[in-house]
Length: 129
Image 1 (cartoon, rainbow, N blue to C red):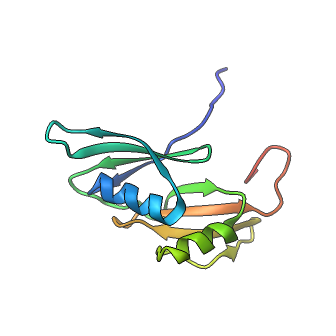
Image 2 (image 1 turned 180 degrees about the vertical axis):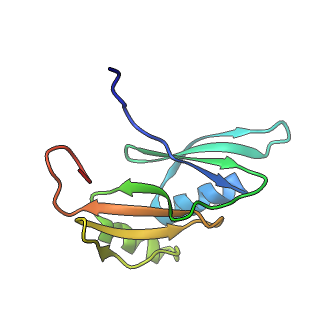
């Protein structure tokens, strides 16, 4: 059976460049590339933060997911929260959850909610398992 290697959540946004700027400024995501229409408008972008990739795709109508659009594990939620709040990002305060994760939530300019989580008691199989 094939082995899954990684995942890349794709968020629908109204403006790819504005969305990329929000993730870059708030958390340090770096654009790995932009794919553009003939008129130069960004249609798609891949962003990277460490080993995490997140994609933004332009949509004519953006309907944010109910709940989280993506759940991203990090090694230090408190430090990420400090960085994001210093940049004025709309993030929630860190909260410890009954399932053993400390989380913050970020709402992007289009209303997509991304949860950043730290596994407080990681097992040998990895975060969240």
